[in-house]
Image (cartoon, rainbow, N blue to C red; front, side, top):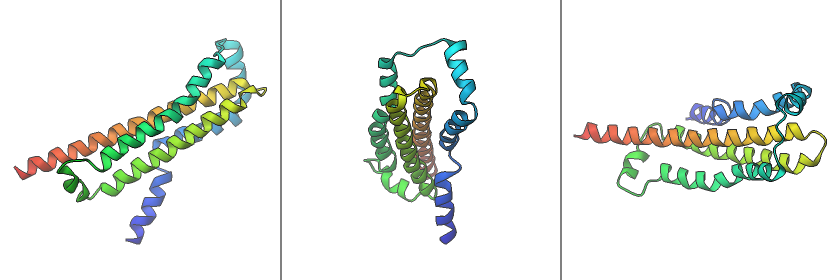
Length: 164
């Protein structure tokens, strides 16, 4: 039982792909800061308007309640399948994936809002990139929830097929 808890807590932080997206931002920001600035300013020559940038920055924050509602529907369905789901041996992994996905979405929203607040500083290009990475990370985390929903449906259909 104790090893399950150790794997549970290790599993919250490390094996999820959201961690790679989350760690990608500081790596890109600190290692390639000068190159990003040159690329965004000179090569791409795309200037994102502040209005569009602020709307993109609020997307990760807006997705959190929708994802939380979706997670509640995954973890506690309103029909007779609830009993079957709660007897599933991989329910702990499903819960871990869903809860840590919500935590990562909150982190992406925080990165996005902090970057939006810091956009008035000198390095606007890096902040624009941070907001875009946060939006991509939130979208990827939402796909994780969709994958979890598919896994639950597969398990429930397999269980119903075995009973027939």
